[in-house]
Structure formats: structure tokens, C-alpha cells
Image (cartoon, rainbow, N blue to C red; front, side, top):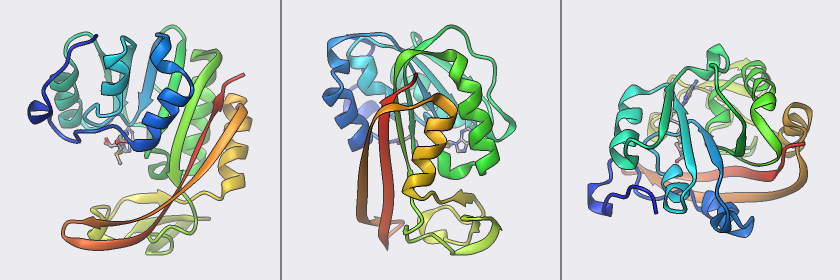
Length: 217
Ligand SMILES: C[S@@+](CC[C@H](N)C(=O)[O-])C[C@H]1O[C@@H](n2cnc3c(N)ncnc32)[C@H](O)[C@@H]1O
């Protein structure tokens, strides 16, 4: 088992995304190990699951304080890369056996998302497990801000903590098509995730995400 903090000592989010957990167990990732890369790894809440099953961890984020917390949470064995994916994919090394992109793609324009995912292809082992979760066009935030590109808005939603951030909303077919085109996704499964939330003490109804997982070809 990898380096572990007690729950009370973990900085930032305490638990992995529920669908990252489902993907991990339903795809049998608890019964093998390998190298996992997370884009937008934040404080390491998702990588902590892989850590507990002995995977080799690489996290990438543009937020240095989140990366510092991730280092505290996950210990010296993990690799963390600070990079702004809006500027492209930084240099990576070797091949990954799992790629997880939970709750990150919405912050990139379509051109940026295409550049990042296309750039990743040479780093994905054949049959690499791929997991993506992002927002759909029927999400509460859609249209709440200035439109900057089709289905892309500069959000004016302080209630979600995202005022001033760019958000791109996908159609189900658009996201699946993007993953097919860039990483050659096969053996695909899709899950609609709809939920209401409370953020900063205010109700945020009508969150709508799509989870897509499959294998890189
Ligand atoms: C909503 S959080 C998701 C954290 C974690 N992946 C999860 O699912 O719980 C989005 C993360 O993506 C990072 N992020 C957003 N835009 C980014 C960019 N352009 N380049 C790199 N990281 C980015 C943020 O700093 C944040 O840690």
C-alpha cells in the first residue's frame, strides 16, 4: 500500500469522485498496477485511490497550492507537474496505463481540449484505460455568462465559485466524438450524472455531467 494520511490530515477534498471509484473497481484496476496520469489532479483526491492499490502516480495541475497539498497528501513517491493545459501539453515521459480527466475539460476551449488530447496519444499504452467526466449542455451553468465560442461561456456564477472562468459544455455525441478522434477511444461506456448541490451555502440545482470511459487504441 502507498503512502497514506488519515482522513483528518488530508488537505483539500477528502474523497475521490464517485465515478472515478466506479471506473476503478468495475474495470478491475484494483487487481493490477501501472502508471496513471490525472489531468487537473487538484489536491490528489482521485489519485489517492490509485495510491492505495500501488499504482505509480502522475498528477498535472496549474494551481501550485493544490499541487503542494497533493504532495502533502500523497507523499514523495508521486510525480506532480505544474502546467497550464490551455497552453498545450507539457513534456511527459514513458507510457501510461490509465488516463483520468475528471472535471477538467470544461475549463478548456474546444481547440485547447483537442490539442491536449491529441498530444497525449503517444503517451498512452495500447489499451490504456481512459476516464473522462465533464459538463453537458443541459447543465445549470449553460448560458450564464458571455458566450465566447459555441457552447462556451465566461461564467457569471459566483454561486458555483466559477465567476470569470471559461466553461465549455459538451453534447453527448460531441464528447464521444472528440475522444474517438483524439485518443481513438473504443469499448466505450457512457453514464449521465444529474444532481443538485449546495455550494457556498447556496443551492445549485441541475448539474449535468457525462462520464465516458473506454480504452485508447
Ligand atoms: C473541479 S477541479 C477537479 C479536481 C479533481 N480532478 C476532481 O475531480 O475532484 C478542476 C481542477 O483542474 C485544474 N485546472 C483547471 N484549469 C486548468 C488548466 N488550464 N490547466 C491545468 N489545470 C487546470 C484546477 O486547478 C483544479 O484543480
